[in-house]
Length: 426
Image 1 (cartoon, rainbow, N blue to C red):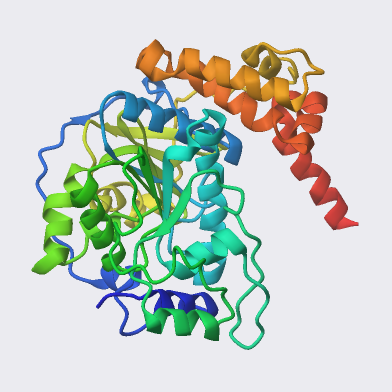
Image 2: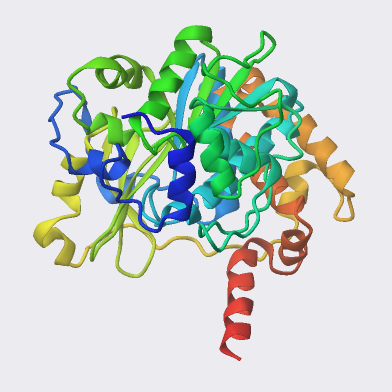
């Protein structure tokens, strides 16, 4: 059953995601799973021989995402997946919270991701697709508080986007009526009423970014149709493709989606959180291997296994995060993680600017460094340098974070958290 813009708008006002009668992620998770023999090669190594380079805060994570996406595109992949929790570290997966809070958080994360193309001067040719007209409207115009429907106030996130904003699911009369009922503004006339996913696409679009199309399989079917129509470079951002990989789709577009389309998607960046007494993640940062990371006694993560190809979540869960394993203390021979440095000069050095550099000088330095270190120019062997520049700029361009970095160095995240905890305790 296709999920219209009106139905998704209704879910914004509803509380839980588990909605009877809808083809939602929850339904996929409860359906029968099939076991696949994908012939992956398991590369085992002791924990002490495997480097665990897992982001510890949102800026590090987004810098890593940016780096991996650029490396993937540089290597010629045209259809990419980016999947990570809505909070850094061992956060929550897509679908773990109520709809409205999650959609709002997804929009914010998508905006931070798309900032990369602004920094590189490419945003004019990047078309950003939202799941439906309602989400596109909120992204462009925001939404006010509506106590009747339960709609929370949400500020616009893409009102200043220099490229085009679009949507996947048809904007029919029912959808428009539902948007009015929930207090969501109608789209501008030149965008409203689209009845084909590729209807507003243009020849000069160089890249499609598809934002969180996971509420029904039909949203991803629209992505598949868009790909077949134009074959533009496409990044699927937090699309929860695992719901398709593990779902049961015996016929029609769903079967094509699972068996023909999703297997062609290259994973640029991926984090899936496993919960339990001993939590952990399945992690992949292109071009690296797939790593199973598990929380260890004393803090930090240990890598307990590596894979050359994507392992099944069920296999990883049963092996490392279920049964007696979750109640056993982990013994690790990994050396304790190095403490964060007090050095408050490294980020300026990475960008090659003075400590009193203006925001314009920071932006100019980032563009120059990023272009020189871009995988298209420097190759994927220099990804660590590209990542360092991206991480530095992500912090220094934000005035509040820059002040904290100038005082605390790399410990700025923990320092801000400690200050907030102290204020809250008063």
